[in-house]
Length: 200
Ligand code: GTP
Ligand code: MG
Image (cartoon, rainbow, N blue to C red; front, side):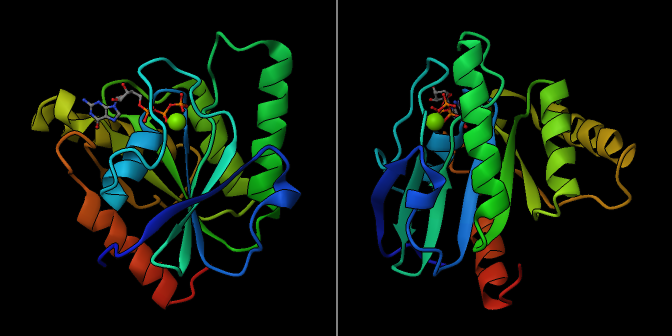
């Protein structure tokens, strides 16, 4: 799929104010600093569409982007960012959970995990929560440029083994690098297929 248009629509903390759920929607989520906003820019090939930062906790709202006038891409705040106050953490996770549970046009949630580190407890808890809610998910191993091909293979295997403790089936797993544009075609092909099958 080619990206012919990509525009920022709106930021929300109130899920009911998100754009009307009349088009297929795909969301990026994962721990703070894992590379969600960078991946939005890489996939859309728009350098500053989503705001990125080397400091964790940059994205604090639900951000809708309209792609090719026909589907939504959503940038979400990260979970598990230690420096955020307890109250703020609780309100973020409330917002994210409400969004994920109520968004009827959500075709797939891409859960981003840093390819260099073992999946953390909150990653696994979050993936398991999505599974229990029957929210379709795919995994994305990010920052693939920072380790070798062999280490990436090991990371992928490691996550698969961990997930198979709780689940019989594995979700699709993508390896990406926003720096090197790796994984772009695969993710776009997956999205295109999901839309064409009206699969959600
Ligand atoms: P929050 O909004 O804070 O939750 O973070 P985020 O998940 O949106 O991360 P963001 O895209 O802002 O990226 C965090 C940092 O990681 C930035 O310094 C990015 O430049 C860097 N980064 C993101 N993706 C990659 C990648 O694929 N390779 C490399 N080398 N760095 C990356
Ligand atoms: Mg972000």
